Length: 599
Image 1 (cartoon, rainbow, N blue to C red):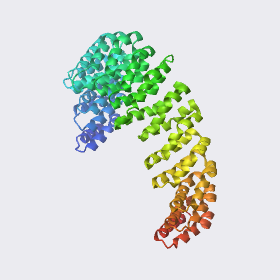
Image 2: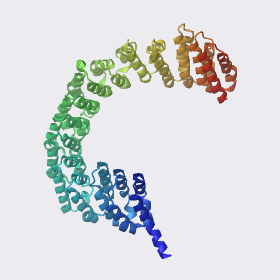
Image 3: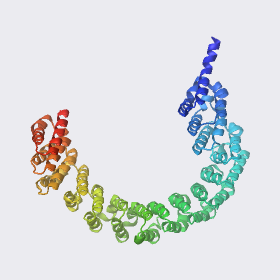
């Protein structure tokens, strides 16, 4: 019996060994994902003494298997006996942190950071810190890049002597010969800065950061780029009196870096930097730097800066906000739109980014400045050939409406919108139709009925099918926004009237409108107002109209009760089933089949 118990206890590890040696990668992967179950079956002692050593010795597999293993080990603390024994998980994770595949190393580092919190301070010094030092001093760059992500975890909980050793090792990594290691150090510098004492931040880390931010190795702007990210953390920690001497010279150099990617990162992080350095330095140093980014020679940099215009202006000190926007920011925005003859695809992104935020300047600048300086820009953007630019302006009209009022808005911007809606190019008209529900929501039902309703109805009889189709969908969205009562009084009379139009295309448009409006107008309106129109068109002289009647009944028939279907829909379809035209008969039979199935 004892021998049998022994065999049972060996079974989980034996199965694991067999599965991990199997040629099928999926089987090995599934086995790794069941590690916690196997560990529970083995118990904490055998997990520590057998399972973990076995895993440490067999870390040679496909990347997806190693990735799963690295993830599993991060949750193993209770399975090895808790805090007292968590250090036994370090050897396999250390091996995983040195493999060639980046995602495996990153997951191993993530798990190491996770289990570091389960170590006591004594165990951190005895087991975790030596691991960090071994990785930091490894022969292969893979181990040294992994080490960069581990310094900030043990640092706050170890003795001053060990802290000094950690700082020394991090310093060595920042000056490593391999660019990938310096890049990893630059990427983790911000989080390390947050746990360092201010004294060592100023004496040790900032000189390292300055060197990384000016890393001149060929094709290694990525090191300088990541150093910009660290700048936000460093600037938020330092007292104001140190910022100007320790941070700003490096930041200004980054804003003028020869690599557009570094300048892009500065632009992307600009408002975070603005909040970190405070109002005084913003006034003195950041406003000129922001102007430079808005006028950068690379469109990607200008677009990143343009996205930050509104937020940057909102965060300016109140005493200089309006004057700074008027004298420093708006001229740069206008400059971006003066490149009309040089428009390129990239430049469209700049204008689109500006269009998405510039309306937000209205509440900051007030009515007079908006009317005088912003409205001309809005008009220019509304006529831009890029659809996204026009959409971004129309999407944010409510910002301007709140400042200058609907009367001023209608006098200035609406003529431009109407002009575009009647453009000779059908694609321009189509773009305006797509914006109309959005515009209607911005302007309100009364203003819409007065100024834009007739325009929407005129699109239903456009000579281009795509416009007529878009116009019918537009009506549905407008009814969803303004309600069924509005539809009955404003839209439906005009739609029903089109059923008498001499042009058969317009009569077909009536049916298309009924198809989409039936869903939003409600069953009663559909039955009393729309269905009679459909039934009447069944006698139309044009076959295309008649077979669309059959398709419409099929589409809206599910909304009616049995009485309506039997008394109105089926007789109409029976008549169409005996039609001379083959297509009319086909669609009538199909519609009848659907109605009978539904009944």
